[in-house]
Image 1 (spheres, rainbow, N blue to C red):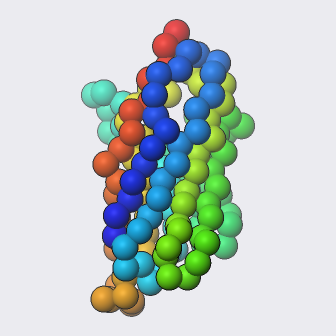
Image 2 (cartoon, one colour):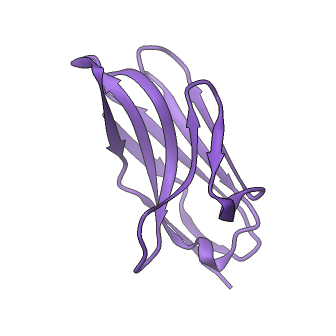
Length: 126
């Protein structure tokens, strides 16, 4: 399973950015997709996630400012995307944002695994 995140960059405080993540590979099942972030000197933390049924979960620090959504175009994993719309950005949102997927592959359909993308840097200037 490969996760490719994009959309990071530099933005001024109060601005907006949209992150995208494409999941590809021999994906059999997706239970959850989401975004984590890690700021310098801090632990990686959950930003938001979305389960296959559509329910979402947000960190308190981003509620009302960030929106997560996902799209599964086809069952053969030709297009599995997760998006993070970020608005009213603050300097404390500066971090590397990682795309995350929990699911299984065709090689082992009953075995759930955790998969991570490389991350995309978001920098919010004050």
